[in-house]
Length: 400
Image 1: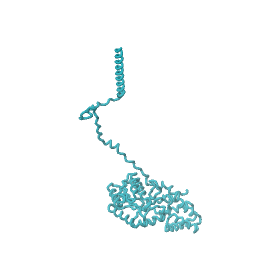
Image 2 (image 1 turned 180 degrees about the horizontal axis):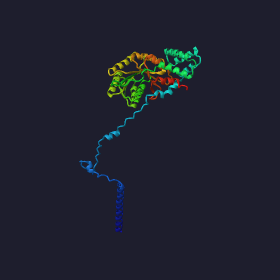
Image 3 (image 1 turned 30 degrees about the horizontal axis):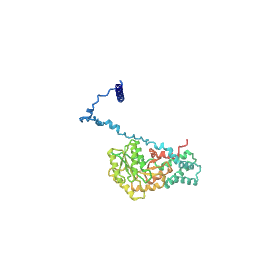
Image 4 (image 1 turned 135 degrees about the horizontal axis):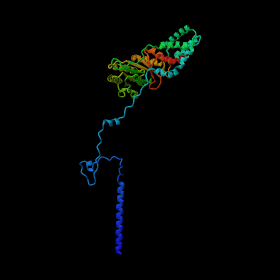
């Protein structure tokens, strides 16, 4: 009986041992990588653990692989990492901008032109009718002197013409308005001359849209194939330099800026210096808005111009006026003219509630031409001023 128990015990031990060996074999097979297919390319001969570990001695536990050194960067790698510069915008051509924006201007000025045409097309104009013509001109900000001259000229022409059609009245009014605005003045912006960039100093009171106008002038010049450097000489308003840099970056113009609260004359000087070094066609310098009643700020403006002149002559001093302020713009203009010699005017917001006659009044007051008009908030809504296109927009299309 003891032999029987011994045989059973031996059988149980053998069975357990065999089962454990089979289980280990199965588990090891599960951990093996999947077999490679014939379509795969066999890898290069791998280094042994000792080769990967270098000359370090093996420990009893096993060899630890040393991390591979990063590969040397190539020029191609750098190109992938560095972001490409944003594409520059292509501004609308400057030529004919006023024509394209004519409908917008006509909508805001229609009461002026149509009102005059209606008054002057009557058969027999009475003194009361002429008083209405005069009132219409004055309400349109034409100015007292210009209004008197216009009324006198219109009276003379209507007396000669006698019976008048709507078309005749329109032609007569168009001629007289153009005579007041002037068609012979040079309204172009002066740029590169004598191997140096044209220097444009932009001035004005607070709130006229001066910094925005500087950015739009840059777009206008770039549209005509000019290269531009912007000078952020408004160092007192924190956002002014950032705003100008954004405008310039859109069209590839370099912006020179200084520390906040720094000397604006120094920034303007450095901007002109950069423009000369780069061979730019124009340097447009933005200055801080200043109240025309502050003598100290006006003297500072004179200083900026003097300092810039040490580097290069100032070709243009553009006064930015808000056309919606009407006759108050003339008061501002007088003071700025005394501080710096104004060479041209940029009238902003002329598509809003502004009166078209302000163009005549400003030119008579300053003796300089309106060179630019703002007809909207879009980036390309600043247009070179064209007298014929402007008057045609005021009066509407002729009756055929």
